[in-house]
Each structure stands twice: as structure tokens, then as C-alpha cells.
Image: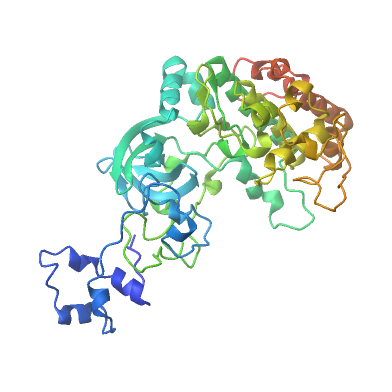
Length: 488
């Protein structure tokens, strides 16, 4: 592929075109004639000619007045996260591990990594290359857990968890990055639903959700994977649709040019050029950002499709729980919200929420991030599942904004009643009523079984929640067989 280098259009971009001269032995002796030729005759100032390199950015997210770059609106990672301790700058065509892995496509990004499709030039296969931010590369438990799975149950682990193929370290401008090499996988359960043919072309009245049997298979396969982890003393910690991936068809049979992502800004494959506000050259960020292109066209989603759990970055051993799990807001268990308690049943609570979400196409608890997110969540729990037990309720520091001393709900306005204002009351809708209102494509008897299963899982007392293995024996899950599952 060609290197992407647009014609200079501003003083800042003109200066950015000069670094090749500063690397010459005579870097302090560039002639005016050479400078004039390099800038295509544009006039500039002596100050621009002697522009000093930018200072090293701080190894943290910048304050508003510390931002380095012009805003990029492409759906990519935040460009300001390219700093010491942050992402490694990657361009299409880059090679890693002494020339073994050649990057050809971006698959996705997260808070702590970017993920790329790469060609393994030594073994003639495609792999997924996960490059961690350097800040956590020396302390991640992800690698310890993946190694543990490989040691104790390699065959069963490979059926349920995306397979680790290789690991290495890469030194870059932002530090030392741990790089994990996995088998390539298709889109997540979160995004694959958008690719199903029945929703193309999209019409406004469509309910975009998986067909019931497909949703049921996704849930059972992910539950089998969760049961496998729990049987080996591991909690996933970030159990959500974004970390459930569809398996691919035979991707290795495709030539590289079919899978290659184009360096094409017009096609929205990459972002506009990354430009500093001060016009200087930045060595910590890439020249452009890549828009993620999951492998949806190469994904098997027909009969017998396979789901695996991915991203063990939030996982932990039961014996060593984290102080702050990375569980998404709407999937947090009540004890995590109120007391910070962390145990293996947090995954089970998340699963109960996901049964509702995958069958109805709507989240059970939709909690936008805000200063009152916890209050919002706890009010939603009270409405959907019933009153919190005293043992939990006493930890709700803001409860007096919503409940009388006798625990009677009098206000649903987040943050409390405004001075001189009136309390806001909204209709309290149970989980079962929300389920029915969503109109899932189930017969009445099956809908009853699903609602009973959700109730059985979403218990306020963690000790009363069933284990993943026990949930697999629920009558609803016993009705479906999935290929390649565990003994359950």
C-alpha cells in the first residue's frame, strides 16, 4: 500500500513536511534555497524555520487546556490517548515482532488496547494482534489468566475462550507495550445483529434484535464459557455482548488483498490527518487513525454458529478480586454499587441482565453515565425487581432524596427535589412488565420460562444466585443443544 501524504495546505502542515531535513547530519545548516523548494515557495517566518520540537506530553489523560490535537470526529479511539503510557501508534502495513506480524486491518479498540488483523508471515495465517497501552503492560493479569487456562484445560479453553497464540513486547514512543496474539474472530454479539440480512435495508419500524433461537444459542454458549471459567476459579469481570465474539468461516483461505483495509479517507476507512494545534510534528501519535472494520463479511452466523468469550482484561481469580471491576454500568450488581463488594456472582448478575437484553433487544437497566448514575440504577432496580433489602439499603447514602424515613418512595427526580419544586413520581414498572412491553417473539409459555429464569438469577442476596453450571440445567436451556459445548 502507498504511504498516505496529502499536499500541505497550512503553515502547520508545511512545517510537518520538514522533519526529513532535520534528521540529516547538517540539520542545523539547511539553506534558504532548500527550505524554499521544500515548502513549494510558500513564505514563512524565521520563527517557523527554527520551531523547536514539542514537549513530551504527560503520561495521563490531558486537562482541557493540555489538549494537543485538532478534534477528530471519526469513530476511533480518542487521539489524546496517544501519550507516554497510552496507545502505541499503529499504521496499516506496520510490522511487529521482528517482521513476523504485518498489520493489514483494524478490528477494534478499547480503553486499554487496540486490536488489529495481521498476517503471520512465518506461519502463513491471519491473527488478531492486541496491543495493550504501555501503562498496564507490565501489570496485567490478562496474560496470567490466559496462561493458566492453557495449562489446566487447553482443549476446553480453546472451545470457549479466544485462543492465545503468541505474546511479545514492543518498544515504542509511548513505552513498552505487551502484545497478545489471538486467533482472529468475527464481530461481537453487540454489533453482529446489525449485519443480519433481515435488517437490510433498515426500516424505521424494525425491532433490531436476534431471532429467539439465535439469542438462546448465544446465551447458552456464553454461559457454557462462563461455567468453564468459574469451574477453574476465574471470573470474567466484564461479561457483556461486546466481549462475546462470533467465529469466522475459513478466513485463511482469503488472499491478503481481500482483507486489507484501504488508506482511504474519502471512504471513511481512516480519519483525517492527525494534526497538532501548534502545527508541530508529534511523535507519540500516528499520522491518521483507523476506523475499525470487523470481519462481518467473513463471519459464520448460520446454523451451528460458534460464540467465544474474549477480552480477559477485566478477569480475575476468585482468590484475588480487584478493588474496582470494569463491569459496565447497567450490568452492575447492587452490592457492587452500594458496598463495592466483588465476588464471582457479579458475572451471574450480568448474565441475568443479558438474558433480558438479548431476548427483548432492550437493556434491562439503561444507565447513562452521570454524577447520579448510581441513584438512577438503584431506583431502576427498585422499580424492576422490588425494594432493596435493609442490609443493602442502609448503604445508599442519597436514599433520603427519594425515600421517606419509612422507606416510602416519594420522588424520582435524580439529585432530589429542586428548591421550591415538586417531587417527581413516575410509574413503577416491574421487570416482567418491561419484558412483555418489549414484545419478544416468544409464545406465552416460553416467555413465562424466560421471566422466571431472570427472576431466579437477579436475586439481591449473592448467596442465593445460581452458579453458571446450575443455570445450564434450567428447563429453558435444556431445550436447546449447541455444538461443541461442555458436558452440560
